[in-house]
Length: 180
Image (tube, rainbow, N blue to C red; front, side, top):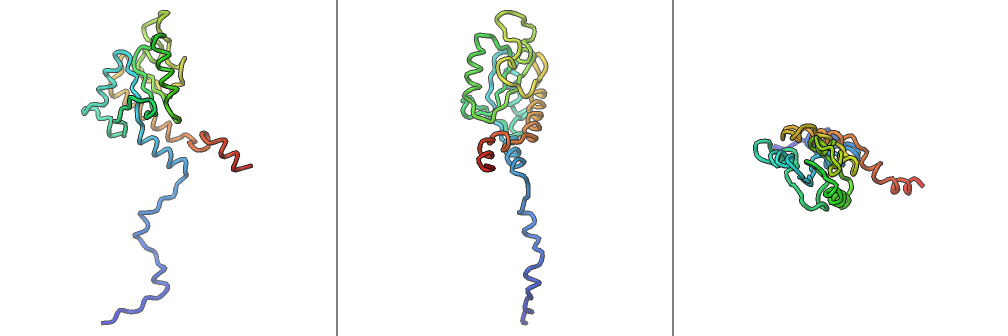
């Protein structure tokens, strides 16, 4: 049996195989989607909150389902600093130095009452909130906060990253050169 000859209309018809392979989006949305799903935390465990931060990475709470299981102890490989615990003035310079070594874009989470506001320590030796030293994106309350609270804080950071203008804010000089 001879197959009928295909007309030009048949060849240019709708192909359902291509439909699932094409994505149309904004560059900001694509970049932010990649950033929010591949955050690498820099744990700055300074006190009792660090134990709860470690518990969040264990199998019971499973931080890896958010793509954040890779705790980086090198600031050059991390993009989220989790300041967990009491920041003394003696440690403040080390925290600032590590923050400065992290590449852009970077975010900070203040975990616990001590990192957020100095906690119960109103003394000359304790920094009254890490936001006096570096910009904080998410505050997690509690003394110490539970691992679930850290997970909620990380999800809120993901929502914040999702709405950023990643290309426009970070490449202003490049955009100005293109416009000029």
